[in-house]
Image 1 (cartoon, rainbow over the protein chains, first blue to last red):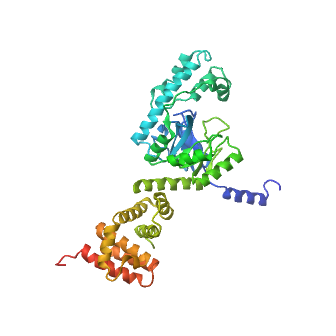
Image 2: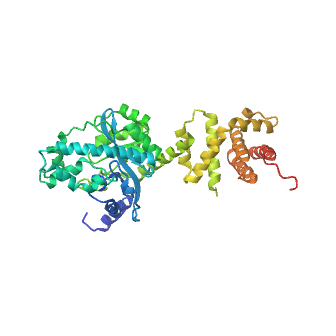
Length: 296
Length: 141
């Protein structure tokens, strides 16, 4: 059918109306290892026509401390907490909690302190690989001194790229940072993180469940108070998504998802997303948790 | 038109009925039941309060009902009537800020919708009796 024909335009307009409204629940801003400011992340979401977006910075909710300029997208309070389960590091997403909850912030501060220790160890590890490791701290003075920021390996990867020790962030990980062994076992446990999120009125979701996770592991996590798993994720193939969806259905988990956008293509905002219906289910679960806490 | 508090009362009645027939109802099921039926937070909280407080004071409420319902043992009553009476008795005895006329009217409306043809008059009779003991009118009125 040639372009611009009435039937084609009719089909296009029908398709446009039928396309589901999307939600991106996993993005990062400059408060952790993203390169876009919270405002520009929100502006991009509004421009793309996303129904809702969540900035889920690593171990910090600083992006949600100031209100966002009014736009058509809904901003959902979020966080991505680094935690331990079976002596391995996992990431736990939290949504809709009260960011001013003191015990929740105390938990995040604990993780941020560990991040600083790990960061120093990484700089030590990079001696001999970077031109001048001490200059790294000069570049990241703001992030180091402000307790709102969470430092991560991505900051170092960027410095390696700037110093021409690697040609891209991925390359910096491949050439240098993947050899770094994190032996810190003081991170919050996944149970502690689930409790913190729930007590702050939020719901928890396992971020990008790794390949080796089993159904029994997830059942155990459900016992800890986990509310859902991330199914829509850029790295996941169709069969992985299908399996995770099946497990989520079996364990009555909510389905989450997002682009994990740090500001660098191909993971752009909205490149991976869930439907508004899934978000409604998440909201209902959050409300259910609130009522449950009143009941107990 | 069903007002918000009326909807909350209806959901609380449904929950009381449900737990009466299935006592192993979990907290999560209760929460899910409420969230699926009521859209606003204030009404959800009100429905939960009615259900929770009625369940907490169940033995006291049942004793009051037994005293007021002459010739009627609780297990003999229809399940809807029994739970409707529990809900109404709770509101009359514990929710003093709600006018008794409102409680009676709401209970009768629910009886019309969920009970049998005889339910409205039955509920009215018993709740009226409880009302006279729980909320006695001043002598000079």
